[in-house]
Image 1 (spheres, rainbow, N blue to C red):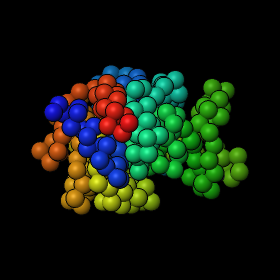
Image 2: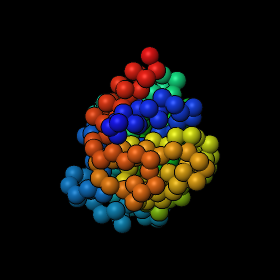
Image 3: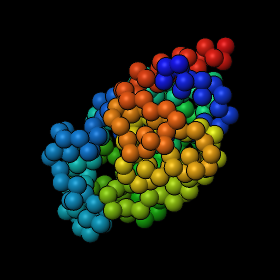
Length: 255
Ligand code: ZN
């Protein structure tokens, strides 16, 4: 049995499937991975973009917004790719418990996965939130203001500092989402990693939580990951094409 076939078989048998996605899935939609050279990240120093620098001065916030706006363009233009649609298909087949994602682009929701099934560990770039009162604004609305010449947008309700609703360097992981993700990883019977190299916390930990709780583990990533030895199946390929093939076979199993 091929690895694709074996993965499809496992998914077809699964009663509680959790999918975990990382940057490798979004790069196939043309969104830069900050760990890769080139693009917006070659023009900005991550050390200048920490949450601490953002809070510390107007200059730090200006720098952050300049960076964030220049990376927003490709994200706003990005469309879900076959990998996203394959995962959405799992949901429509009744096979998806949750998607846990490190991505901030909202492409899972846009591919058709219901909002309440997506746990965004690193927040979302599609919303801007006031750090004072918590009011949220659609990103497009705030980017319009920046186009109009405003360098550091302020909250309409309270005048507070606003920041894209993402988790920045130096910012604590969101407690609620992290707890939910850990609980879902512990409760699933199959954990499917798609496009994450599983090297940074908490990504690195989630598959192990699943595995220790008795789940099976499938890893689909372009390059080998440190957790491949624990995986029941590890497929090294582009996530979009590999997931599409797997889901085609899942459909065959279920029909
Ligand atoms: Zn406010």
